Image (cartoon, rainbow, N blue to C red; front, side):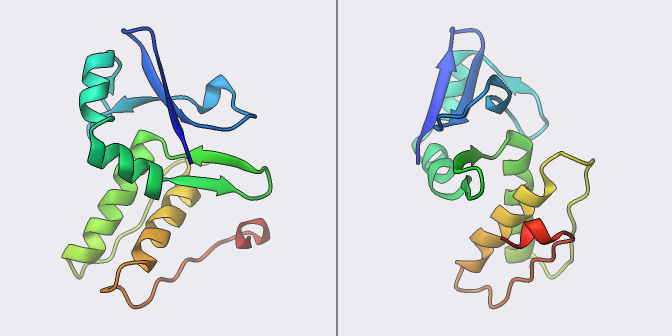
Length: 136
Protein backbone atom coordinates (compact mmCIF):
# COMPACT_ATOMS: atom_id res chain seq x y z
CA UNK A 1 0.00 0.00 0.00
CA UNK A 2 1.20 3.49 -0.79
CA UNK A 3 0.17 6.99 0.16
CA UNK A 4 1.01 9.85 -2.15
CA UNK A 5 1.27 13.51 -1.21
CA UNK A 6 0.86 16.34 -3.69
CA UNK A 7 1.67 19.96 -2.91
CA UNK A 8 2.52 23.28 -4.40
CA UNK A 9 3.76 24.44 -1.00
CA UNK A 10 0.49 26.17 -0.12
CA UNK A 11 -2.07 23.46 -0.90
CA UNK A 12 -1.13 19.94 0.16
CA UNK A 13 -3.24 16.81 -0.17
CA UNK A 14 -2.84 13.06 0.24
CA UNK A 15 -4.35 10.04 -1.49
CA UNK A 16 -4.01 6.29 -1.83
CA UNK A 17 -2.09 5.01 -4.81
CA UNK A 18 -4.42 3.60 -7.45
CA UNK A 19 -4.71 3.92 -11.19
CA UNK A 20 -8.36 4.93 -11.14
CA UNK A 21 -7.66 7.89 -8.90
CA UNK A 22 -9.59 11.07 -9.50
CA UNK A 23 -9.07 14.43 -7.87
CA UNK A 24 -12.15 13.72 -5.71
CA UNK A 25 -10.16 11.08 -3.82
CA UNK A 26 -7.47 13.53 -2.68
CA UNK A 27 -7.87 14.92 0.80
CA UNK A 28 -6.59 17.83 2.81
CA UNK A 29 -5.16 16.97 6.20
CA UNK A 30 -7.13 18.46 9.08
CA UNK A 31 -6.74 18.61 12.81
CA UNK A 32 -9.29 17.07 15.22
CA UNK A 33 -11.44 20.21 14.95
CA UNK A 34 -11.55 19.86 11.14
CA UNK A 35 -9.27 22.84 10.52
CA UNK A 36 -7.37 22.27 7.24
CA UNK A 37 -3.60 21.86 7.34
CA UNK A 38 -2.66 22.86 3.80
CA UNK A 39 0.82 24.36 3.98
CA UNK A 40 3.49 21.80 3.16
CA UNK A 41 5.60 22.42 6.28
CA UNK A 42 2.69 21.99 8.70
CA UNK A 43 1.36 19.02 6.72
CA UNK A 44 4.74 17.29 6.79
CA UNK A 45 5.13 17.91 10.50
CA UNK A 46 1.77 16.35 11.38
CA UNK A 47 0.89 13.86 8.63
CA UNK A 48 4.37 12.65 7.69
CA UNK A 49 5.42 12.14 11.30
CA UNK A 50 6.72 8.54 11.18
CA UNK A 51 4.22 7.04 13.63
CA UNK A 52 1.23 8.73 11.98
CA UNK A 53 2.13 7.97 8.38
CA UNK A 54 2.92 4.36 9.33
CA UNK A 55 -0.47 4.06 11.03
CA UNK A 56 -2.22 5.52 7.99
CA UNK A 57 -0.39 3.17 5.63
CA UNK A 58 -0.80 0.02 7.74
CA UNK A 59 -4.21 0.52 9.31
CA UNK A 60 -6.26 3.05 7.40
CA UNK A 61 -6.06 2.03 3.76
CA UNK A 62 -8.66 -0.38 2.40
CA UNK A 63 -8.58 -2.40 -0.78
CA UNK A 64 -12.02 -2.00 -2.35
CA UNK A 65 -12.50 -5.55 -3.65
CA UNK A 66 -15.11 -4.99 -6.36
CA UNK A 67 -13.40 -1.92 -7.86
CA UNK A 68 -9.86 -3.22 -7.17
CA UNK A 69 -8.69 0.17 -5.91
CA UNK A 70 -7.04 1.34 -2.71
CA UNK A 71 -8.96 3.81 -0.57
CA UNK A 72 -7.55 5.85 2.31
CA UNK A 73 -9.68 7.29 5.07
CA UNK A 74 -10.52 10.97 5.03
CA UNK A 75 -9.32 12.94 8.06
CA UNK A 76 -12.69 12.94 9.84
CA UNK A 77 -13.01 9.18 9.24
CA UNK A 78 -9.57 8.62 10.75
CA UNK A 79 -10.42 10.68 13.83
CA UNK A 80 -13.78 8.90 14.20
CA UNK A 81 -12.20 5.44 13.93
CA UNK A 82 -9.55 6.42 16.47
CA UNK A 83 -12.29 7.71 18.82
CA UNK A 84 -14.22 4.43 18.52
CA UNK A 85 -11.08 2.43 19.28
CA UNK A 86 -10.30 4.68 22.25
CA UNK A 87 -13.88 4.29 23.55
CA UNK A 88 -13.65 0.50 23.36
CA UNK A 89 -10.25 0.36 25.05
CA UNK A 90 -10.79 2.99 27.75
CA UNK A 91 -14.42 2.83 28.83
CA UNK A 92 -17.41 0.56 29.26
CA UNK A 93 -19.76 2.94 27.47
CA UNK A 94 -21.52 2.27 24.19
CA UNK A 95 -21.24 4.48 21.15
CA UNK A 96 -22.39 4.89 17.60
CA UNK A 97 -21.36 6.60 14.40
CA UNK A 98 -23.93 9.04 13.05
CA UNK A 99 -23.55 11.15 9.93
CA UNK A 100 -25.23 11.99 6.63
CA UNK A 101 -25.70 9.64 3.69
CA UNK A 102 -22.51 9.21 1.68
CA UNK A 103 -20.19 10.49 4.39
CA UNK A 104 -18.24 7.25 4.80
CA UNK A 105 -19.83 5.77 7.93
CA UNK A 106 -19.53 2.21 6.65
CA UNK A 107 -15.84 2.55 5.80
CA UNK A 108 -15.15 4.24 9.14
CA UNK A 109 -17.00 1.53 11.05
CA UNK A 110 -15.37 -1.22 9.03
CA UNK A 111 -11.84 0.04 9.68
CA UNK A 112 -12.53 0.60 13.38
CA UNK A 113 -13.93 -2.95 13.61
CA UNK A 114 -11.00 -4.38 11.69
CA UNK A 115 -8.48 -2.68 13.99
CA UNK A 116 -10.39 -3.76 17.11
CA UNK A 117 -10.55 -7.39 15.95
CA UNK A 118 -6.76 -7.58 16.02
CA UNK A 119 -6.41 -6.32 19.59
CA UNK A 120 -5.82 -9.11 22.11
CA UNK A 121 -8.02 -7.50 24.78
CA UNK A 122 -11.05 -7.42 22.43
CA UNK A 123 -12.82 -10.77 22.35
CA UNK A 124 -15.71 -10.11 19.99
CA UNK A 125 -16.59 -7.53 17.35
CA UNK A 126 -20.07 -7.41 15.80
CA UNK A 127 -20.40 -5.50 12.54
CA UNK A 128 -24.00 -5.12 11.36
CA UNK A 129 -24.78 -4.09 7.79
CA UNK A 130 -28.07 -3.10 6.22
CA UNK A 131 -27.47 -4.12 2.59
CA UNK A 132 -26.36 -7.31 0.88
CA UNK A 133 -23.58 -5.55 -1.06
CA UNK A 134 -21.87 -4.69 2.22
CA UNK A 135 -21.57 -8.36 3.18
CA UNK A 136 -18.50 -8.64 0.99
